[in-house]
Image (cartoon, rainbow, N blue to C red; front, side, top):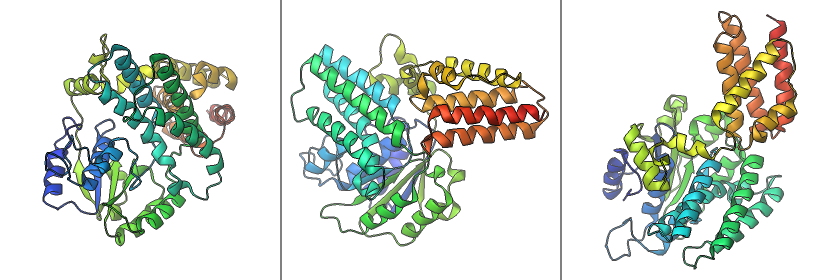
Length: 406
């Protein structure tokens, strides 16, 4: 159990609770980003649905090949729902690199990185389950992308022989392209309330086999109406149902929700431990295995974070001097803010520049106003699907109004 969760004591506590049938119907995995919380949640799902019919005579054994475990390893078990905002693109790119390199080298760990890539894609597509999106106006646009991704994923089925190198690379490129479209166009920054309502209906349907699992990532980012809708389910949880919430900020989770979940704490891995994760999971080489997890994943950004911060500084200082930068040139410099993680870096750069005394640092109310404008800009793109060009133009007008008030 939990063989793929490295350097987290929570795994021992969870294993003990599962083996002794003490795991409650709702739990919270709390800890910093990139500490393995989603990995743990998905492994709990596999263990709880394992039939135990394996040569090891042990429920949830890491090498179990029962039908349920196979589905869970591929993240294709229909008894598991996954929701909540997440930036998936960098993990998909890192997994793709490891997978293709292992294929070219015919490495002994090829089966492992094959699953790594499949799972990285499914961590995105699971959030677009028809269960969660049924009746949504966006479903007609999501469906063709999902169909294209599923068609390519079937070619990578672990039970099938891999295609030759050229075809494999084309399949992976197609998957990355369609996943980028799916994430950039339809990933939300806060879980929609309708998805909680649909999940509630699904949760009350009787499962034909094993427990049903509902995983909600970044639970602290739920709006109040969504929290209240979730609370209603937790107050009267269905039988054979387990809710797994994750958060990087437990203090921001509604107290009434905290009172209904058992918390398992995850720690920040130290530098050597993070480097081992990068080496063992992504099989990094050529010095890249010495990077920390987030630093390694950021290698796959189309523009280096330092360049984005530089662009943010230039943009902000031009505005404060009375010049209005062209939004098109800003967007081009920042690779169209794809993935959306680049927009977050850009806006954080603006807020840092404001706090660093570019103008009267004593006027904290101005900094607060700038932070508010940056947050509105981010939400415009990630929540309301406004184009980055339109959002940056509005941000320029908002920030210019700040300059005139100085």
